[in-house]
Image (cartoon, rainbow, N blue to C red; front, side, top):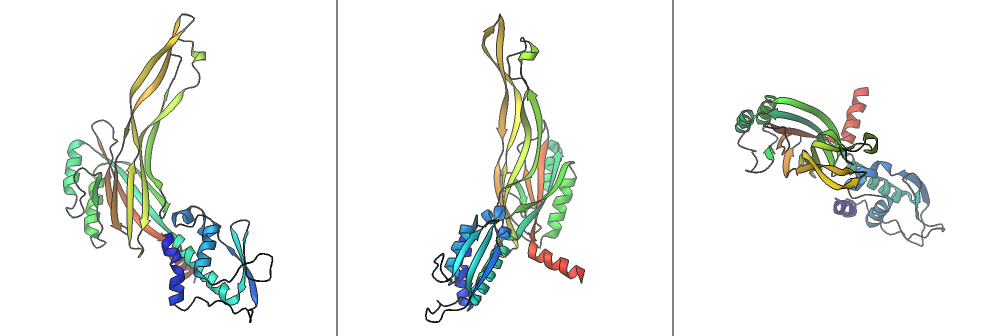
Length: 321
């Protein structure tokens, strides 16, 4: 993504927007403007290769002919201010190019992904029937946790059929969330807290046992969504981070006052799998979790939809007219 940003200078030059180096014999009148960079920094900025103001300055210097910068002089200047602001002193034409570049960076950062997630539970027979009902085109490879991913945005009927198949199972939970393009986030999770007494053991006085400790059992499905350059498709990298408590282990540490001191800790099995898929905007991905209650199968259906802030702003503005 950052490579694309650095290439913006070449695009501006091809469009006739890049200014020539100013003639020192004919100094242009300089204008001072302050730009608020907060909309293109932060988590969205990091996801798009713009983690801080320094990265913005680098893109400006590689894309716009600002001129030689000497702080404290009457010439052009770039000054980082507090609150994510950048003060620019330059010719009016250069200011226009800087404004256009910052707007281009903002447009790159205004893309997010809305993900609707449904978790369904099947018994063994129900899951087998569900898996068979999935359209052949778009089925995942054998052994992959990705059961289905439809990349063709014209296959609406197949997607609807798959969603209906998911609903044939028992609904566990449903959620909606907005995620940053190119940044990892937890798409879905269900982790129950289990407490345990770490020690000194059941034979010791209760007041000496100390506060209980806890461990979480369940699943967390972490996703990394990336929108394609043409804003038509979404690549999803999905990673399951799950755990199951299988028991409690005890270890004798010795004796105190004739009583055994026993350290306790839960035995935890880490589960999980990972897979990637590319789907059209509004497409469907079906992921089988390694975690599930005994004799059950849990399936997660995800539908990512691309959200573009600038388009949302236009719709809102049109609605007010």
